[in-house]
Length: 286
Image 1 (cartoon, one colour):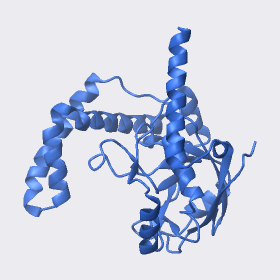
Image 2 (cartoon, rainbow, N blue to C red):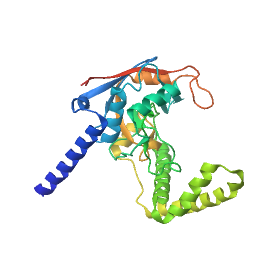
Image 3 (cartoon, rainbow, N blue to C red):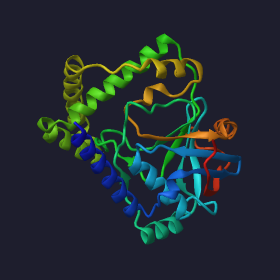
Image 4 (spheres, helix red, strand yellow):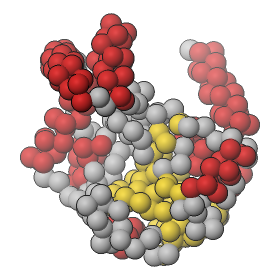
């Protein structure tokens, strides 16, 4: 047993070291918090150690100054839900810097049972399952949950939504369904009006498979501690088990609230530019 535990620990250690070497992040960086300065105030973030790929990617973005010099916007804001950043203010300048630093397109998903979408959670934005069945996170776009409080009945609705998404994700990642799902992706990508009926037919087939999967799988239910947090502190419960949560707000939720209150257009884009002015690593707040 001791030998097995030693082997597992060694594998985790070596994996962590490899991840650090690839991301240009030092061990000292892992002991730091991140100060995110916006034109609405400062937010301090703490990253989780058990989501090392997302953590190291975010640390590298901060160290390389990707979020500095008014270069990144909070481009999607929904009050009582979340604020999302990552769109470039100057797209041409951003593309040049990104190419120079060789950032990846996506970061592999690190969805855990431990981290959830409580108020203040930091998550990796991503494309939907049809475009991104692996649920990989964006390397640059992130969101911070403002959220709302839940009751037992609204948590039951959110749980049902989660289980439907989990079942659908199992279906589209099942090798037996690869051919039909690949065809579906191609049709969606082409967006040809003549393919409307074909898309509808495949979607109906996928929905039927999802219903079967839901009946066969063990349904997800919120741990009691998560349920209590959603009923008291609040959050975005319906996102659990489908997005990577890799950190949380340590201070500055008043700034998150201020950004969330911003007036937006029909696409949830703030009418007034909300910028990230700078980011830096700071001594961890206890």
